[in-house]
Image (cartoon, rainbow, N blue to C red; front, side, top):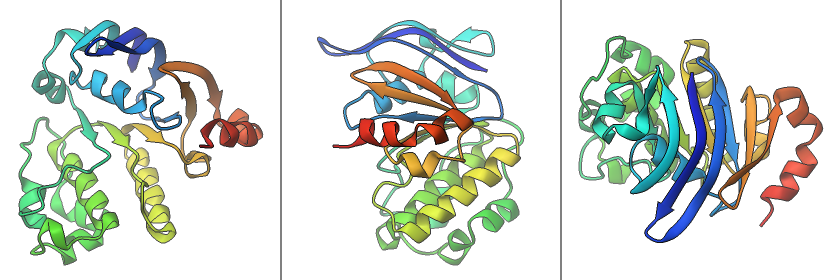
Length: 230
């Protein structure tokens, strides 16, 4: 269980997170929804120890992550897939895949990774600059799975992708969840997370403004769409 309690965070002098409270049960998919600038990515960065000033508590396995460095948090089995995917464009797919170290036992082996992402195997010798946006996203997730991390922070995984690739990403997330992984899914697309996440948090101006279970979310999809509208 990942528990966030009264989390505040600052960018320089700007107070950007205002007392967040959020629970992420083990083995579940939790969505964090909001417009651009709502504080979603900042929340992910705070979990990973990548913010400057933070207060409150982020409890994971009985440890407050706010007291740890980013590398120590990663060794707890938490990994982030950033919005820009973070792959190395000059390296091949295979080189990117093997670059991060294994940080915990139980990392996914290559056969399982290639079964989840057949494109990754086919594109093994291609450089990052030669990949489509969808292939880059698949590589970024595959790279995390090899490391042994069991809690995944996926930041806008469908951003800019074609509908057919979005469906493939959704299938992959479902398969990963069935394997017992815990996932925080940052999104602006309410219809993507509907039926995919177990719990939904709505975020605005650095605060959680609502929490909805799956059935509640489906009944309130119109209100959520209005919240997310630009």
